[in-house]
Length: 273
Length: 302
Image (cartoon, rainbow over all chains, first blue to last red; front, side, top):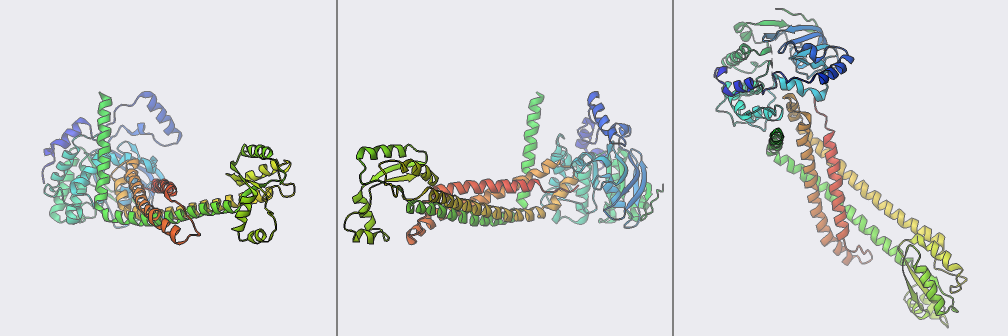
C-alpha cells in the first residue's frame, strides 16, 4: 500500500479546497442573519454556533432507535477535531446505530448531533446529502454498486455528489492505488474478494479527503495483513488531520493500534477513555 | 467567463448523470427489455380493445343515424316554390348538414325495397307515400327545431309533419351520447387497467433497484439526481411499450379490421386510420404520464 502523502491529486484537491470537507465560502451577512433567525426560531444550536470546531463531533442527550425501545438513550459524546476514536461494545450495543446517527441515516428522537459543523439532527431526509458530502463513511456491508467497476464505484460519488471537484478520475484512481487495488480498477465487485471489496469501500470514503471519516467494522472481513494495511491508512488520514470514528470489535486492531475507546453496552451506555 | 464555466460544468454534470444512466442499463438490459416487452404487451391489449370499441361505436352510430332518417313529409297540395322556401329555411338551421327533396315516385320505389313497407306499396291502388324533404342532421337533437319550424308550414302534411317527434329525436340523441360515453368510459378503463399493470411492473423494476438507490443516497448523491435515472427509465419503458402497442395497432388496423369488414358484413367498422393515430397518441400520453408520475413518487431511503 502506498503512503498517503504520495497522493498528488488528493493533496492538490485538498489544497485547492475543492473537496466539500473544507470550509465553505463566506456567506453574506444578511443571508447568514436570515438563516440564523430561522434556525433559532426552531430551538437548538444553529450552524453558526458550531462552525468554530470543524472536524469535531458532539452528541448531547441523544436518544435514537428503530421504532421500539431506543438503542441509544440520553447519550453524550464529544470528539475533538483530528481525534481517532474506537467505538467498541458487544453486538446490539448500538455501535452501528451511533455511526448511523452521525451519518444522518437515523434521526435521533431527542438531542443534538453536530458533525463537522453540521447540525445532523435537524436534517430532513432530502437534506442528508449535505452531511454525506462532507463525511466519508465505510460501511460494514461495503455498499458497492454491483454493476459498476471498482473505479466507477469510487468515481461515481465524486462525479454526482462532488460535482465541482476537478480531476475526479485521477483522485479516484489514486484512492484505489492507496488501498492497493491499482490492478483491479476495472473489476466488478462480484469478482473481488471480501477484503478487496472492503478496500474499494475505503477508497470511496477517502477519495474526497473528508475531514471526518466514519468506519463501521472496516476490518471485519479482511485478513490480519489487510487489517493492518487498512488501519495504517486510517492512521495516515488521521495524522493528516481527519477525525476518525471506527466501530470495531476486532481485538487485533484494538491491541495493535491504540486510541481512545468509546465503550457501549446494550441500553446502558458509558464513555471510557 | 464564469457563465461559460458554469455552462461547461452543467454540460459535464449532465453528461456524467447520463453516463451513469447508461451504466445502470448496461447491467440490467435483459431485465429492462423483459419489463418493456411486458408493458408493451399490456398496452397492446388495451389499445387493440380500445380500437375495436371506438370503431364499433362509430359503426353503431352511423347505422342508428341511417335507420333513423329524418324526413319532413310534404302535403300533396304543396307547390314547388313553397317546398323550395321550406327547404331553404330548414337548411339554415344549426345542426342540419343537408336537405334533399324526395318525390312520391322515389318514396314508392324505396318502400318496395323496405321489408316493412313493401306490403303497403304492393297492395295500395295509388301511391300512398308522400313526397318529402330528407334532412341529414349532424346532431339528432336538432330534430326538435326542424319539427317546430315545419309544423305550421303550409307545405307540410298537417297530420304527420315529420318522421319522428322532438321527443323521439331527444331519445335518439341521448342514446348516441350514452353509447359514446360508454365507449369512452370503457376505453379509459382499459387504459387505466393497462397503466396499473404497467405501474406494478415498474414497481417491481424499482424494487430490484432498491439497494442501488440506498447506496446512492448513502454516498451523498443529491436526490433529484437519484430520481433522474428512475424517471428516465420509466419514460423509456412507457415509450418502448407504446412502440410495441403502436406496431400491434398498425397490424390490427391494416389487416384485422379490413378482414372483419370483409367477413362480417353487418359489422362495418370502416377505416381504422384516424382511430389508430388517436389511440396511439392517447396510449403514449397516458403511459408516459402514469409511469413518469409513479417514478417521481418512489420513496427514497433517508
